Length: 94
Image (cartoon, rainbow, N blue to C red):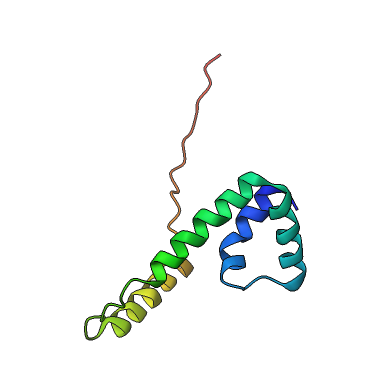
């Protein structure tokens, strides 16, 4: 495993969401790569701090409004994009 692959999986590794095979590869990489080990330790510290933050109560209707906006955004992404059909004609003079 190289540094790029390791860094892409560090968040999942911290959350125990990697495959057993990837866990072994990351463990081995972190034993030999100080830069990735430092990145892991910093990310783990941030993750621990975030877990200590209190949960905030969401405003009434938040989930329904979020769902509605996500549906709208999804429909906009699926809608055909208008094509700019301007045709430019070039005349040659010889």
